Image (cartoon, rainbow, N blue to C red; front, side):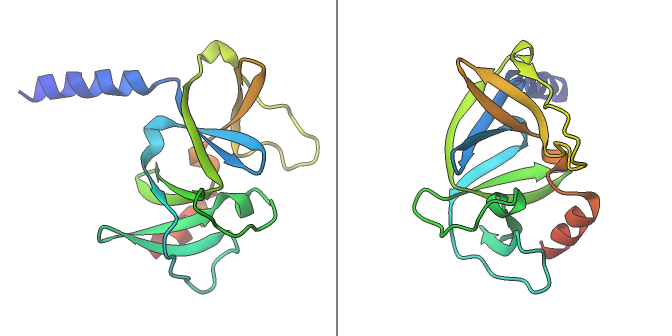
Amino acid sequence: MSEAITVQWVEEEDSLVGKYLTFLIEKETYGIPIQHVIEIIGIQRITEVPDLPVYAKGIINLRGKIIPVIDVRLKFRKPEKDYNDRTCIIVVDINEIAIGLIVDTVAEVLSIADENIVPPPELKSGFGNRYIKGIGKVGDEVKLLIDCERILENEELEVISDMG
């Protein structure tokens, strides 16, 4: 019986390969691999936790589970913006830790084939493209593909996971 379940799980995992949930921060479209997404919820009351980086907004209670949330806009050094009815929290699994990513709005799920993904350009500023895993070409548009494992450094992940 468990063999059939394993096969089904592998097929489901394979069907997620190349699929990205896209979201907007200002006018830029970003994508995260769909296999990291647990769920998408509307913005809700966030309890602030003292002594956190400015982008770590606090925690939410999601059906009894405490989830730390970060504002992706602030993490990407964009100006702060009031939340509205389009603001969403994408709950993702990063190294087996559930974290909420606050984004301006969710766009769609896209399939992007490997041959349509190019590495990000190398920057000489020292900043590099730490969060960007690749650039997806979709028609005449580009989508900046986020590396979920690198959106937070190990120390940040530890601090934020302790909140939950």
